[in-house]
Length: 144
Image (tube, rainbow, N blue to C red; front, side):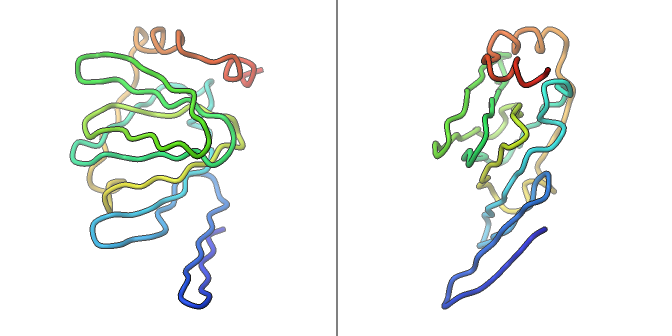
C-alpha cells in the first residue's frame, strides 16, 4: 500500500508493496522506493537493465543485496551492498540486483527514467558464470 501524508509542511511517503514506486518528484528528478520482488531472487537471475541518459543512485535500507554491473567493455563487477551507503550506477552501465526477501532500497534518478530511458536484455550464460564468482555466502544460503 502506498501512503502519503502531510504534517506542518512535511510530506511523508510509504510504499509497502513489492517492486518499484516513484513517490517524490521535483523538476527533473525523482525519488522512488523499491522493495524486493521475485526478479531479485538468485533462482530468477536473467535480466539486466541500463539507462542511457541518466545515472541511478541506490541506497539499501534493509536486508542484504548484491548490486552487479556490466560495463560497455564487458567488465563484470558486483558489490555486496551496505545499508546507508550511496551506490551510483553511471548512465549506460548494465546493472541489476540480487537480494534477500526483506531488502528495500531508495532510488534517486532523473524523472520518468523508468518510463522513457530503460533498456532490458538477458544475461548470457558466460555473464552468469562470471557473475557467480562474486556471489557472497549469504546469497548462496538464501537459495535453499
